[in-house]
Image 1 (cartoon, rainbow, N blue to C red):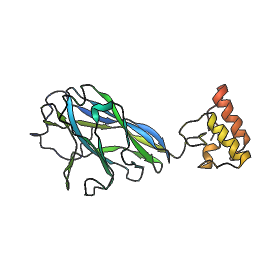
Image 2: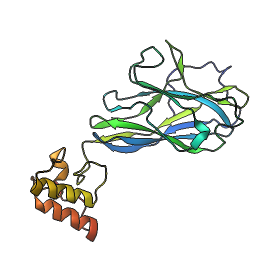
Image 3: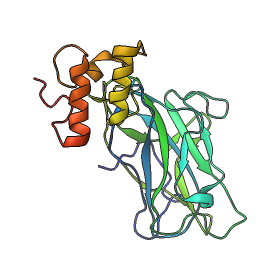
Image 4: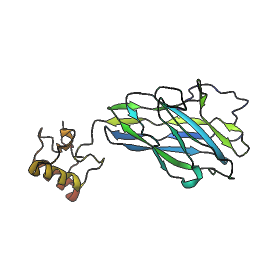
Length: 237
């Protein structure tokens, strides 16, 4: 359901049309593999600027690098200003990060009905689940979240957060690139026969669930990738 984490003065934060919606998509991530999470905006009027601040519900699960932005919408939403947790314009709000864009020299920043606007990159730290909480207003520093329409009036959007699930590892992903493909088989061959780096964690390479990482795991991966065999760990208890 929509989450409101704070209070707004209705006289100043008013959306005259259909309530605009800001959301994070649900996703599954793996420990130690940075991944982008989609940010979506569904608006019925043109948006000139925005400022958002979020908290992560489970403070031990994720961290975000500096400027972790993948710009989907192109130059419409530049420049972007990103703040790290505990570093918001000189004051500290634990586990909060922010994003803002202020441009007044153009006619339209984000057109109505935008959908997927950009993505944030996060590094999963430990297994678990979490959601994002939008900060509507939180002193000190007056951190707040809002959209600004073409008339320069501030709009309080509805916020919906998907569930972010972090798993310990992706079974079969020996080279830890968040994919299971032939490169994992090559990685294992180099590890087993060439003294290459070990999978981290080692369990991620035990595709056939034998309790050990051997050439049989390479054969299992090749059968899965090229011949439609069972997925890695499909036979695990």
